Length: 187
Image (cartoon, rainbow, N blue to C red; front, side, top):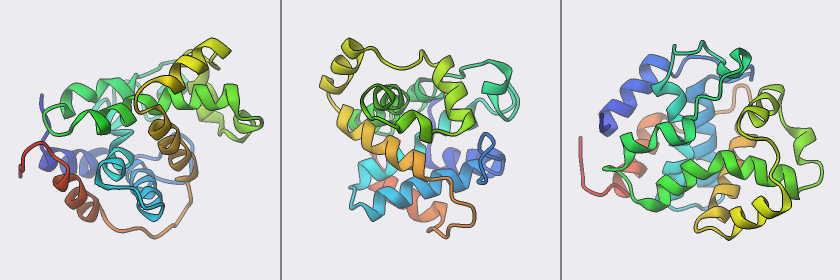
């Protein structure tokens, strides 16, 4: 199923109120905070859109494995499961950033002293399920790939977007930015 922006809004309305994997924010709050952090950093529409939609795969798979798949020992592959649903909406840059944000965590654990210790319990569980910390060779290959640096930046925004009560612009604001970087205007 190819998604439209209206479909995305409906997914957030239907499943965005779910708490974000043991964090003090909902899925929607996490998405909005991630997009807000990207916006505050001066990111363009494509990276702000990737930030907003980086965990949309969780919403697509809502209910398959409970609210926190990692507690069931499940990697829901949210970063790649969403890509076929977005490929007619957005270009490679948006999709690469979304797809790469999980491997960016694996990369940062391998290359940034102390990064792993700053991860939440759920992020640590998902790290193990997603293949664990990259080896030196894997880390080099990852960061050399197109868009990897943007995936790492997205990962930093993702990690910081778990602040209870943080005020952000609403979903409509970010969907308007997403509309500006779509392949073709859609409702």
